[in-house]
Image (cartoon, rainbow over all chains, first blue to last red):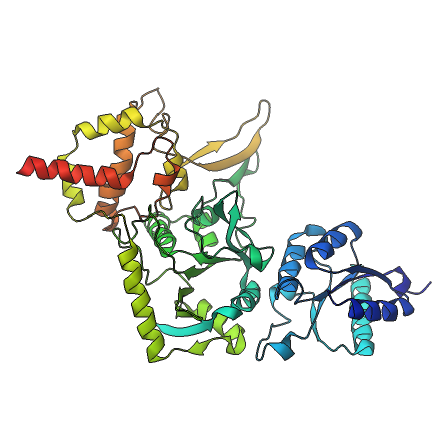
Length: 138
Length: 344
């Protein structure tokens, strides 16, 4: 059994087509994928399933839903250190808007611009989960 | 002071960015009233709120906290956990910022309180302009505008928030958002002035605070205090919701057979029957009228003597919270009218 097959990834996104495509891609690469279509569903699922990594859209029912969901997850002790990658076309639609990936509330996270380069995303996921396992967190 | 403007339709993004500086807390609705709570989603935030049940005081002076642990052998060990937690209070009204500024005078003056100071240091304040309702009299208390005590202060000028940058941290928040903020124009300044004038006219409650210390001095034996004492239930609600009431009780919690435990600090009220009770059973303010009178005197006279301004910000919370409808504005105006009659 490969390293990835043990790992659960939660995808939180209201774009059903994107969820399907990223899920197929990750499953093909031996990850287990959990799917949620909005922040509150994602939060519920994350609390129940404790995924190894979360892919979070930003603009869902609300334009900043992903950001607030991340903050809510960070307040949940068992999710406080779970890596969260923010996947969004935000930088395209909101000219000049940027969040600093090194800022404290995104300490474990990455910002991945949509449209997503799946191969690059996979490498980032593997790097992050590998690093966590090496550090004894995973 | 640096002044910029933020497009209203970017406020949700701005708040997202501000999360970098701490956990964002803002007013949300709770059974028809409002409370500062951690923000779970932007749509919960109610920037049109009139007043929160408790003022932001609860963030810097919690209703109950453990100050230290004591143990027979180890002595006293201060409990400092949580003091370094960064919080961004979003949507604080001017009167409440003023209230925090008054608390600063108390807890950062001659007797510095490290617990209060650590929390205050780690609490960023983003103020927001408001519209007075029937219980607001902050203008009378000179607390409808604050020139300090906030990191950013937002004023509604239509499609934008006219934004005062109060501190270097506020400036960092602006810089962190990239180009969300824009420079203000002459028209923006004019619009701000127009709206400020309109707000000043919207106040329905007025109280003249000039000469109040003198009036209080003269009315120490007034029948007003007896009447208020007969109405007051000593429930302490007015103190609990007051942005500047800071009395607290410290107690060592002891369990039978144990040689260790916590020392806690809990909000107290000068209206409580035991507030002035001392060892030996003596109670300096046993009768309710004397306790009501003490509260009024401390706010309107004692504070002026100590800090040069009254200890009331005119938020109206005590008027709303009082179960027997004791209204501070009515009392102050009544005292003045008694004084005026007597001086004729």
